[in-house]
Amino acid sequence: MTKTSEHQNLLVQLQQVAEGLGKTLAPFCEVVLHDLTQPEHAILAIHNNLSGRAVGAPATELGLARAADPAFEQVIANYPNTFPDGRLAKSTSVGIKDSEGQYIAALCLNVDLTVFRSLNSMLTQFGSVDTAIAVSETMAPAGADAIRQRIDQFAARLGTTPRALKAEERKALMRELKEAGLSDVRRAMDIVAAYLNVSRATVYNDAR
Image 1 (cartoon, helix red, strand yellow):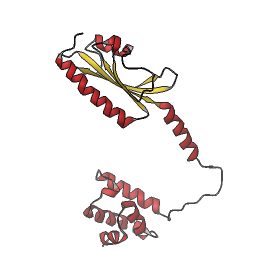
Image 2 (cartoon, helix red, strand yellow):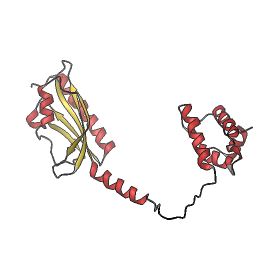
Image 3 (cartoon, one colour):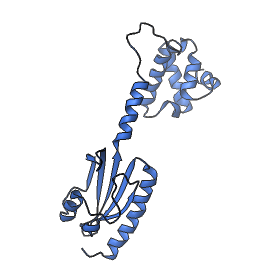
Image 4 (cartoon, one colour):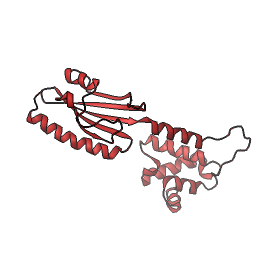
């Protein structure tokens, strides 16, 4: 396919997009820009190289299929993939069309899942507790969880977060906590203040 000035401009702009994504998603996501007008030398840019490919390498089978068929799905997100060395990947491919509806480029993101799976395993192990041990304790004041749960429910009904509650909303919250008997919990004001990220004095004022 012969490149037009439109194609050239799109590819230049897409190179900037690819570079920005590469910097943002480094180092766990490879960002590849394919020029589908030149499938034999399709890779125009590659950032955070995880696959070992290079600029000028040919298009993948997906790229070739997309270049041959304007009706091919434009966005294919989160599909399983594998790097040449066997590492598992999660990939997303976005096809770019010109004004005539022909595919001229593809922007592909390939996330290395190996690191995240290892990290997840470590976090799971670190966060595990022995449920067979009879001893159980909490460092939070009694009733604190009930207060926090009620605050979460209140904020959710308003479509916001606890720390984003406005003054009038906090006053309504304090009335609700009082009606539920939760304001009588030991250190209730301290618990509310910490959870809302406001001062203790503010909570007392809201409770009036």
